[in-house]
Image (tube, rainbow, N blue to C red; front, side, top):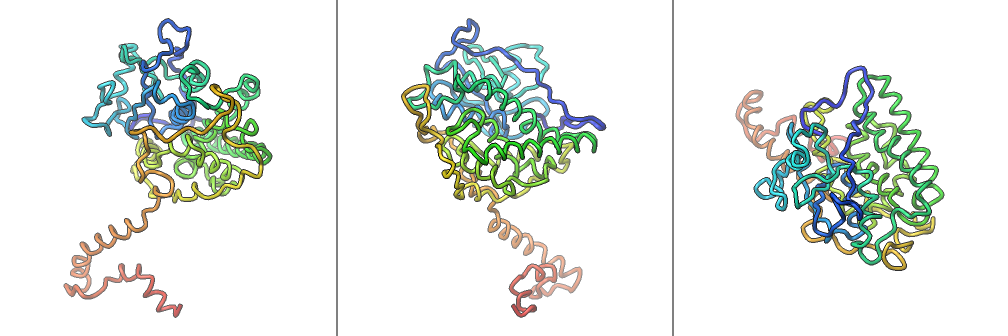
Length: 398
């Protein structure tokens, strides 16, 4: 998505451009074979599709096999950019614009410059940006490089029902929030809204009786639902007008999402600063003033979820290497989400806001007094006094 691009079309419903580079990185490929150290995953933390790859890569322990590049949360009219890296370039690819890796694949490339993208380091070209297939291939094609105890996120015996469920989640929920946010007419918005919340109720009913979507342990299906849920209150509820309820007002889904968030590999990939900056600053036709909300308070993500009563556990099920799956270790050095952007920190701006408000008031107080009461700096301006809750409590005798 590009700053200044048009995402809504008056009178029309939203239709996603689903044209991707569908080449696969696989064990039997002659063009892009699976090789440790050959590819670099470019994944913006803002993007829910890219967030899937961050989670799966970490759960499977592919950090040493596939390096990671993180572009900034916003971008200009050309491309995602590496504006938060030193010198404004990706330290491995040596490029400022992700677009350059797409043009290395095809000088006439005219489709979307999207993330996630798996870049071949030998050529500097994008091997694939097919996000739906990419994570499945991480599970199946990259098994030789999985860590000991890596969970089987795509079990062979569950694939048929799992594929059907993931198609439903993508169509009705993952893409459903975008149909609401980018609707070009009231009618198309109404239809999208009803579809979305019908699907959320259906999934909530399913999860009321089981801990995870496919049973007792996490799978790729949980990853795909999580990346929408974790963005719901921060951006989709307000920015995309998905406002029948907040996630925090849907008891089953809120508990389920917290359960996943607190599972190693999920919440430690979530950057609320990148998420809110991206959506509110990139979609100019939805938010033309680019004002980024200070909330919501994210501390609730760390509260107890109570889902243990349903049995099961995130790990302990089948593993791709070893007998039983185990939790991944600590986040790889250099890949940590900054503390200020994590749950429990992002959205808690009250003290900082109070300080900046006081500073602004002190700068403007004299000017306002001179216009209304003269320059008697000892008088509290009525506008400031109205903010003094202790004074109001005194007036009310409370």
